[in-house]
Length: 150
Image (cartoon, rainbow, N blue to C red; front, side, top):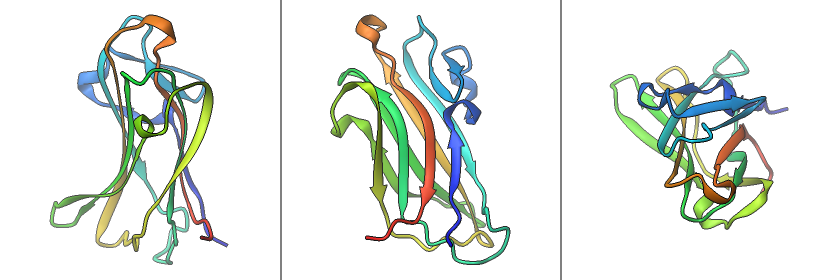
């Protein structure tokens, strides 16, 4: 059985430059009602097996709302090596999937061998909006890493 890692949007650590722009509601992370611009938060990815065992994760899954195509919503899985080098492993972008007033869940497949002994892993949640009209409130509820048979 493969372990699953999850993070709710509201438990992500919001970047210092975004502190006055965000709010949370239950599991959801979003802009405050009147704030616009760029919002950044990070989730630390931990090894749920607490061992060096292979996790086999191959899917970055995101539960989100994305109402307007002039907004941005990206979720990026990255790693930092023991030498300080950062690299992207997988990137999910709601912008390419279309808008909906409803909650959506989409997955991004990737290939990577996780090595927690020599790397640390984290997820960026990036959102931006130009205005607050027409329910323009990109938001994230869940980020999940898991193994899915392809």
